[in-house]
Image (cartoon, rainbow, N blue to C red; front, side):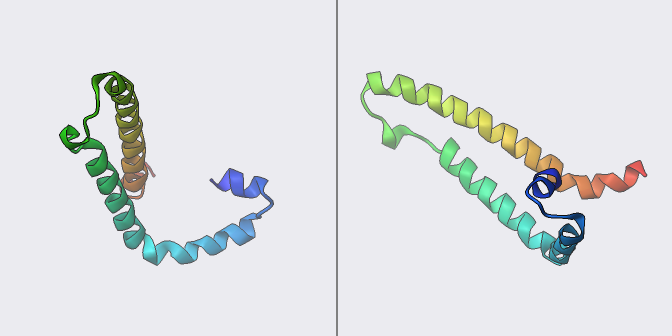
Length: 92
């Protein structure tokens, strides 16, 4: 993200102003966990009520499997990013 912002013309002096958002970190963490929870709930809920004819179901299964895989990748990366401030002091 910093590289993208610098590429867009935002300098390090301006980026240091983002430190002001640090006190709101628990709120952002809560919003992130809530968003992942809602996404997981809608993705993993029972699809029995949404069944359609069998021919259309095959394409839906492949798409749903792909969405589940993407969800787990994003959830894993998010957990790593959320745990980085906790684990980082162990390395220096």
